[in-house]
Length: 351
Image 1 (spheres, one colour):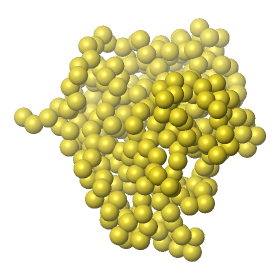
Image 2 (cartoon, one colour):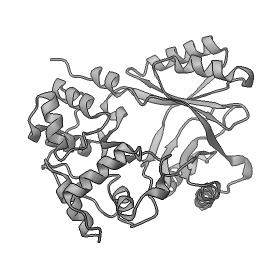
Image 3 (cartoon, one colour):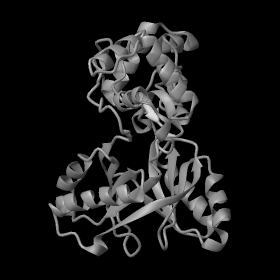
């Protein structure tokens, strides 16, 4: 599908995977910012093009990308072995647990199933994993995030390089707080925007109408959430498969503990590394403590990007062939998304 995109659509995708204005009529200033980069569109045309990208499946959604961990609850990455002869049965058992948000088959001789567990209470993780182990007869390996170096998940396309467009300064002046809990009104807002904003000329006002709030309050709260980290960014969230990013490689590394704080930020500088974390090793089974997700549009591009990560690693330590691996996803087994609603509801402050 990415090959069918025209120059203007490519410019829009490159420009607004973040930094979209949080103002009552955002498409006019967004179009003006594009014009400053040589892409002439009106606010009305920009709206129509974003709507068409959404309708055609090029976008996963348009709106605020919520950081579920900042909203409440916790999520963790888990690996397990699914015997080949009963792989589908094993997947069904895992997927039947509502706490499982994503599940992938990945290329590995033993740990061939990887899923994300999303729970309201971190104390629930051991219980869910014990249930899965009892039902499947296979051990699970919990790999919670120990350090986050980068979460970007941006996917540029060939065309006008308009990534410098950033309208995030447009919006109300707000003061961030250190409050972790949500008010009931904030919960209503989170539930309304978790799957995206309406693709209309006045998306924030339409959200305000839906929850019975003032538009000014919705604008200020979304902008404050962005400043507080509850919203990672506001903009277009592309369907990376539609853009041709079919090579989904999870690179894993056995980085010496004494240099991991240097390696993490260095690898996170690559714009093609969408996620970058430190996670625990598991003695005798899993020797790797550093995860960097890369996405490529071809095997050759993916290999080149992994080589660049390896070269960057080698600037900090002597990387051997046994010190790293790449696990490509071969099948999406479940993808329902992080359970933001449950986690947000559990994090509402008591009155």
